[in-house]
Image (cartoon, rainbow, N blue to C red; front, side, top):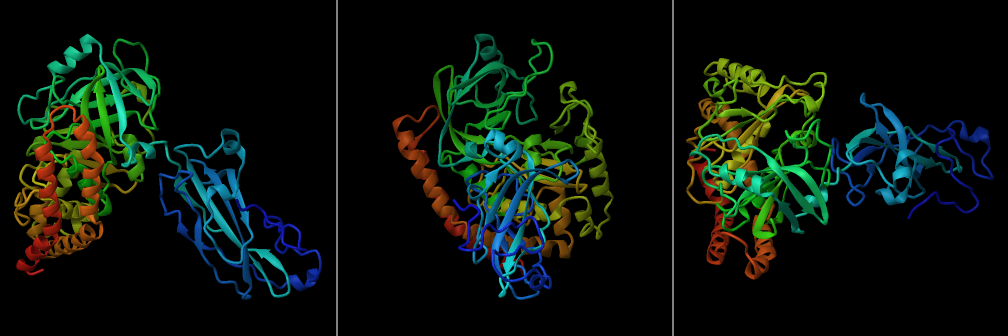
Length: 550
């Protein structure tokens, strides 16, 4: 570990105390007065806005500044502070002083914790911090001088959930349901057709890594294709902060790995158990905000149900991780449900439904928060509909985060996602209003029906936004350019290696005990089909662009 090093014959370099620190011998003070301090360095890492910092993945790296006197960099000093709500530095939590002949990356193990961090043994989880760095130079005459501090670079420490989404590890979730909850959950399992369907939570418990959380909410999830009852391979939602109506007061603030809710997808419509993991990763590489994923095993009342996808729940914590503010409204659309005013109903009976409801346990809304009703979405749809023909693009970018939308649309084409927002079904999507930008972002979901040849006609979308875009040549050209970029991303990811890795991770475990609703022959066949799709799809999309003159 690099500490404050003693240079032979020079004593400690007191970087933070004076404009020019003298060695034990010459030069004289007068000789150092003319030195001009080096300017602040710029950051290579951490990246701006990073929100997943752990001990293992954090490094401070800067690019050099130019010293007006041409002096050599002889050291680097770094600090981490907690931040107040206004972004100002509050308390120093860590520092490091490196004496080096060149600028080097600094990791947390190179320094010392102070303040609260020293007391708890590390940086507080899910807390806003900032790092700042300055360089020290030594002149030819032996004068050492600290430069200016860099502007603080804000980041947020991990909440403990990073390990939950380590895709190399299969985590076990053991759910316990009393008979009355089992019966009530089972009775609500089957939706009444391909329509929006809301289920209720019922009391249960979950054991994760030997720690049991009692009194959580449990319900079945899934639409008309993936819904299963508890005698089958049911998908589940688990809520640790569920407000049990039989218990007075508000629920305790409980989390597993920083999360208070879990979504366990049963993957029954994807026999490869790989499509969702691959598809979410593609969207992530394209810059689309999507949930994290990891493999999991599910047990219910000690019965092994099989292998599941642990899909990050899209809630306030997800929004906080992916947007400038998590105080906006989030809505979900399902089954041929586009952004039309006729799809809204204040009694929640429409096909566009709000994801947040007023709750006295949540406390007072924060300043600038959206009202928890349909008025934000109603206003957005009205603004979109008011854009005249020929005046849709680029004006739409003032309402919708159009860069994200084009990337999502391009991803749906590459994945042949017929069950998403843009194409056949206009399904499996959410839209979020970020108060910090006053723009809306689409979030894709339900990615099991992907990697299937010939599922969509890329130039015949069903969604309102895509149809209007293709009706204006500049917007169509912007989409084509984004699709061409997305093809290059698709190829650079080496999705085939990812697919093979998922296959090799699951195959021996499934052979030993697959759980419910699994067919080994279909597993292998769909993996072969997926490999063929990954190989052929870039060429297919390039040909598609070429035939359209792009």
